[in-house]
Image 1 (tube, rainbow, N blue to C red):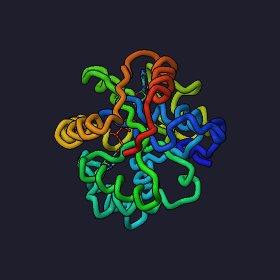
Image 2: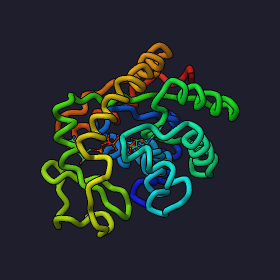
Image 3: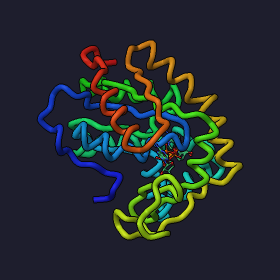
Image 4: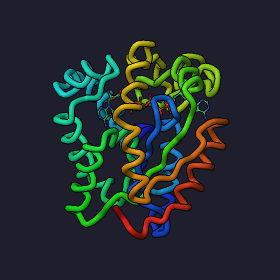
Amino acid sequence: MPWTETSRTTAEANQDVPRRVILIGPPGAGKGTQTHTLATHLGVAHISTGDLFRRHVGGRTVLGERAQTFMVRGELVPNEITLATVRNRLAEGDAAGGFLLDGFPRTVEQAVFLQQLLRQSGTGIDAVLEMHVEEDEIVRRLAGRRTCRECGRSWHVEFDPPRAEGSCDACGGALAQRDDDREEAIRRRLDLYEQETRPLLDFFRERGLLVRIDARGPVAEVGERAISAVGTTDHSGRS
Ligand code: AP5
């Protein structure tokens, strides 16, 4: 099982935790870093649209080739591709009991699509966790990020280094810099976050679903904040 996919485990029988959770934050906020711990805590599947697209790119599929032309420039992959990818992934068995979505939705249009999709199965979004980090910290994080070519796990040359330089502790795969972690693409991704994703925060806030955490500081501390924040959400009245 790839590192980025988490099967239902510890919280499987726990009805008190939210089960359909969205993680939002700017590029480099640490979403991917926290998802494994958080998804395991919630006992739900971890679904990252960025990872799904990168797997297609690595597998040289038609979808991957199309997505890559947008990803390398830091642009959003068009909805025609993205919505079908998400619909198919949510239809897989491990997502039936819940999911932690990382990187989706990114626009109000995508959020409305998700709400409608979940409504068809009589469910809804339980909670939305916003990871807040300032821009100078984001740039430091992205500049030093190294990603495993095999399992997709992110490391950082300074803040979260692997034991052996260039090699993933989790699976032994080779580490590399992501194509979209170049300065120009980073700038475009940050601009798009402000233009397209920030309005989504109000969308979820108005529905009483948004909880914000301070995502600065050591990885473990941010993880504890995330777990405690989702525990405080009132998911009785689903959106
Ligand atoms: P995606 O993969 O979702 O990229 P992103 O949102 O830009 O987020 P990142 O993966 O860059 O950052 P992260 O928050 O996960 O940070 P990480 O944990 O790695 O999407 C990529 C592309 O796919 C998009 O640009 C778009 O083209 C396309 N796409 C995806 N979803 C789409 C959608 N819905 N619609 C259309 N297109 C879509 O951490 C970063 C670094 O910081 C790491 O090195 C890590 O080790 C380090 N770090 C993490 N936490 C800490 C900490 N607390 N202290 C110090 N260092 C830390």
